[in-house]
Image (tube, rainbow, N blue to C red; front, top):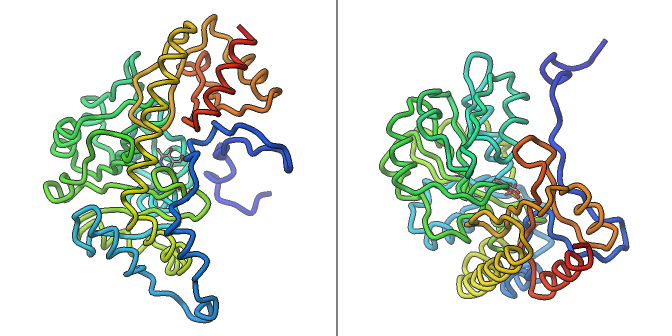
Length: 348
Ligand SMILES: Cc1ncc(COP(=O)(O)O)c(C=O)c1O
């Protein structure tokens, strides 16, 4: 006897990255967090937040945040729909578009939460393997023509990015929705925002968790045209973004010079870590995100993860055929990189 739907009983739950034991100081490179603190302007907005206003329901559309995001990205405010992190927008999209007989497609490996939501919706899954170098299986995705296709670009855990031209081509081929998950776009050279006006089936997802150092704030948003917006608003929890995330997020996005400085430091450190790992005979995949996917020399990634963990360094391991000899390492500060390299040297 179960209280739940058959598909919920049968589903494989999402497993989040490990949290450090309480009180233990670690070098945390397992969840693609930003190693720098949030913008001082975001922290000032948090401190000066008027607590008495919490008595009132917020505007469900977070208009002050939306106005800032609109200005920074150069998209009309009415194309922005806010979410409790971009996870929330993935849920809203799946609820609106996927279900029995209405598939979710993606290239594998990618962010496992798309699969989680397909299971929740009872939707068929078209998980199409990427090539050995992790390029996106564009033609196979076009052929699958699912009700909802997710492309994370840059992709996690691979770091590979699709070009805007490739995504433009895919959007034109699909009759269903194309959700371009740009959680890591802050660290990439290109983004797909221009496609929103070119294709009425394109929605772009953004988050403040990575580029703005606000993973715990829980704030993301979608950029989409009128038709997609109508569906998303129907599946959105009414007050999914409270006034504190909205105010802090607005201040963070308004501080573009701080954002750009942090992003530049992360990209420089990404290059330094890649060079250092290659020197130590890792195979490092080109990354457009704030992390690197690296194949371990000798292939025993589980042993390396465990040894690093014992020494207080957390990195991410995925036990799947394409990833079992690899680690995903978030880019930290220069000190984090030095600690990681010292631990690897001690092991090798
Ligand atoms: C590709 C991708 N999309 C979305 C998310 C979710 O981000 P958030 O819910 O913090 O906005 C993540 C988190 O790691 C991710 O890797």
